[in-house]
Image 1 (cartoon, one colour):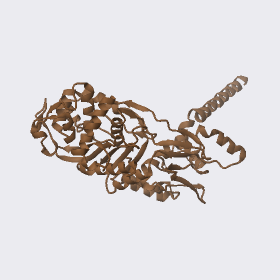
Image 2 (spheres, helix red, strand yellow):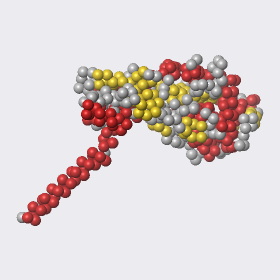
Image 3 (tube, rainbow, N blue to C red):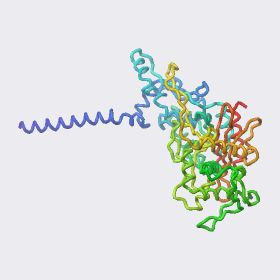
Length: 477
């Protein structure tokens, strides 16, 4: 009998110990994952019980919480609307959060360790808890103009301060109204989410950072940088520029856009090849450089690196194990090269900043509920993409693109603009995506931009004018 009791007692102790271990695993080991799980409605009920902090641009809230008379107490509202939706994201009871709402949730909800003393004070004083604010680097004028310029199109605009990496504009189209998903009318929210998620135009997609595209001839800036960095080429180096470039290992030939000629089909300088965007010259240059040198240069600008702004950015890539024909096409941005608009803005910014690419960032500072500063952004170097000499050579060459090349539509009266057009093609002569990257050197403030228009035609006519408008907004013109 005693032996049986001992066995029962031992089994009970084991089960009790197992329960204790499980409770500790759940409460400690899985605390962070449970806290961040959008399905954990207990956390959401707790967060909705107090005022969430604002997301601020130029001193005005583009997302804030308002007191309402229902069980959730506070409703998230979005004065910034569709203009800022790719940045703010949404904060929804049923669909979780995206954008800054997700990336900076600890500050906005008040759960950050930086607000621990504040939470402790709230507890002892009986003060209603509330979240901190997030102040963004965005310039409202540039953001508004970028969004307006994208009206009726599918595309994205990114503008950076080359000296710091601060993101001045991050616009995408089409967009959506985050308030549709933040509503406390869950049936209406579900209808809106279904409609948005099934829309073939993908309004929930942040094209600036979450989608990659072939870069077209904007990639020639990277190929040129690789050539100059090799020491074997200068801006005046002569390159063969046939009307069609015969490729090894295939009967296919590389052609210029819409069958155009470069300098009558003879030789052309590297500078002029960039100015008129000569495909055959750059295809041949790519073969002479080889894929390893091009890849090394692309990686120096940020390709195949992880990036957070603080939202995660899709990885841009230069393909590996290319055949020689593929190398030729990759050198003009047409093969399997894949980039985000953010990445190409970083390329322009790196050239503008003397070859140094700064880490892009979206949060200027975070604030406590009493508006005291919790943290301030500290600009830092992302990579050294080129030497200062190569950056200076590239700047002069890109200036000629805008002065009397393919990018004249980006000209700003009284301002020297450097840039490069790009037109990605599905088939030779059939444009799909229009690109422009550029910057205004020797200006204060400084700005570097990338513009992408999906199925927009030719970069010099579709994307360059938008880049000009955004640069003018930043420069105060």
